[in-house]
Length: 128
Image (tube, rainbow, N blue to C red; front, top):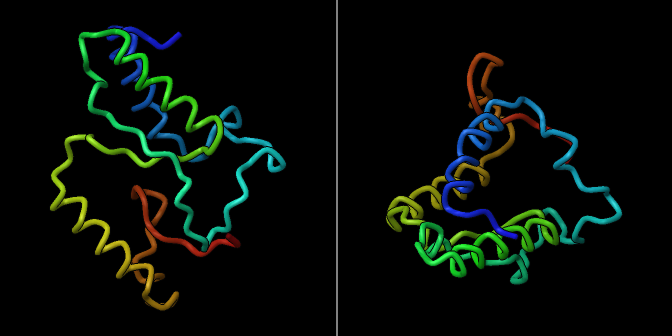
């Protein structure tokens, strides 16, 4: 059963606490054999799209449907594309443009942006 509005609001501190983790908790890592098979450099039109339009709805059935869609998508794919989230489309477009431009840079140039352990985020080369 999907959480009610109060339970959903109670999840916020938990989700914020996860943002401070340095590694992904093992409970969130799917066994390699059970992961969707989409190449790291392949685009897929199958990645689930989830609308947040009813995330704060007073109608518990509509709110439950949002949570159910999120859970289904994450359990089956491990990734979702969120729509109707309220973020200004101009900002989303600008971030997509900047991300594309950054990842088109040569590795040597991207490494100039590598962050130290005391900073959040950054770019590092891995074996992915």
